[in-house]
Image (tube, rainbow, N blue to C red; front, top):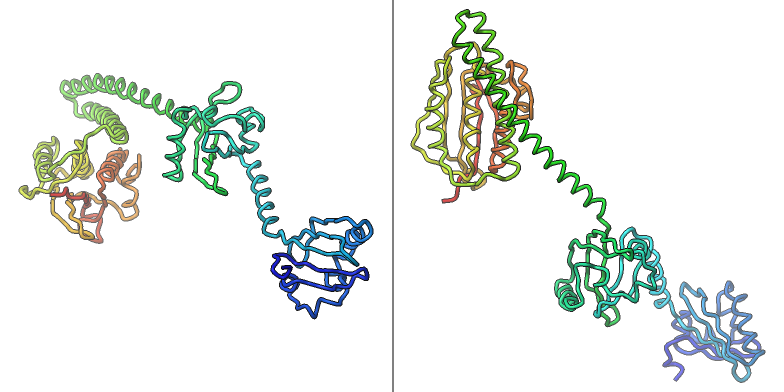
Length: 457
């Protein structure tokens, strides 16, 4: 019967000699009976525990009553040592509690760590009662730990109710986890915004709703401030855009009238400069408004034919005053893309820039080409806009689409037009790049290439 017992058992006589060991003792000490029986118990047990156990051994022997030492490190194991008085000696029974001790140690460590987290963490039973709460939960809500473990989750979480609790518990049991925002009701009545992460766990046959919640009061305040600041900035932008544009229109009217009345060429040239500046100011305001509408997603995406659009822009720019303009484009090759009304601004900017920056020459040539291409197995519509102007130096090619980047080779350019082009093209899931019209010689003119995904048939 003793050999079938799960723990080590040793019979020790009054002279401290081992007279019997069971099978578990052999396995525990990794020695056979011949190496254990007949030897002093203090030769069997490690020397470093003799002083500890000698007291309990002699106590059981002299008092004829059991004695116990419950915290012994023996052969890298955690043990409880029981000394039972027996005829002519003492029975020593070792209980190996290593696994239990490790579990309890991990439990104590887990509680230690939970109480030092900056997040509220607590377990909820199936009936909604708070089973365990950490220190942060008490601090955040203002309740003592004892008060909280007598409360229910729907007394704290304003998103949950007593009637809906079982549905919520069963839902998490199926989904295993969820994340949502809520407000916790503190003891003083304050509502605290929190981000809640819940998990379903099962321990020793019991089901729990495990909650980790983070106070997001500061985040919510910052989000609200950003929202208000954005709304205010948009209001100022609308007011300034509207009012400045109105002032620009008045100034434009008078300057255009002066340009018609004045006969002196020098004076007309002086009038021409502020006239162009105000026209550029109005165009800048218009571009900013378009960018604002683009970022706010106010424009509807629809099917658009690039061939039809390019043909319309060709006819529009052929009649630009002050220049002898030739635009080569052969319509008739439809290519549809998904875009909005601002697609016109993409190619209007590119054609307008080619005319505007054509240099002192009165003769401007622009070539437009539309073709279908295949890249990585997908079909795209590619539009090429090229000119015979002064071109763009290699060092500046990567900068021309930057926001408000002024072109060093051209006076008066603010760059927002090309920034708008890139923003629009990327919003339509396309790309835009700049090249030399004649490869390797930028002085022969520029080529801008826009590639947009073709609409599915």
